[in-house]
Length: 207
Ligand code: PRP
Ligand code: URA
Image (cartoon, rainbow, N blue to C red; front, top):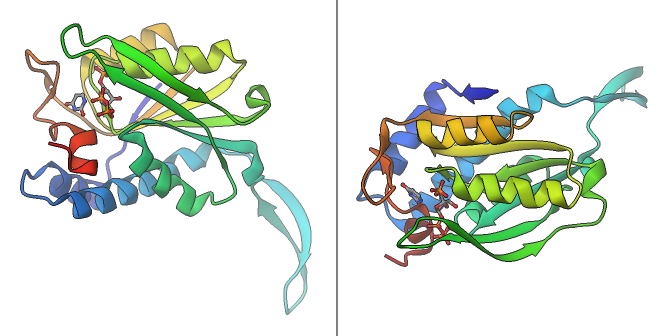
């Protein structure tokens, strides 16, 4: 299922993110903020456990999340800035890393790193990457996680293209996708149009 998050604050931050003159410092902060806001939306799915607690006034039952049940999985490099936003509201979640880059000629993803915490088969995985273009990187990352036993995966991105959304929905219909925007399409270099350029380069100032 695809969730396009329509929210004035998310849109306002995304508008600044898209601007070409936004500095790497501001870009990183905006990516982090948007990731936090999208995680809030994903959180509407999470189950809580009611526990009896004592307030200064009286006892009551209160709803808790088991934060240890979550693993944030940034797709390197650009996903790292989003992971910081997710961890602001789930600070006790574990973090797993998947390193992938797109081949410059074929645009096919190449995996160079994979490191997960134990027992990902029992956890809820929040895979984060700001850009979903052809969908090759996200699809391969999700497949690698499933090959290692993952069962419950949410994919959170900031800007997506219809081609990438169709690929993930087709190949991984069990994965719920959260995106701040669905853009028009891809250009000849498989960049999202209008998009925001190369997210990794803008985050790490490697343009
Ligand atoms: C970007 C982006 C995604 C991927 C999306 O990473 O962060 O991982 O491209 O494109 P796709 O949907 O067509 O696969 P990139 O390959 O530029 O690597 P980087 O983050 O290391 O710069
Ligand atoms: N990766 C990016 O960083 N930007 C795009 O537009 C497409 C892939």
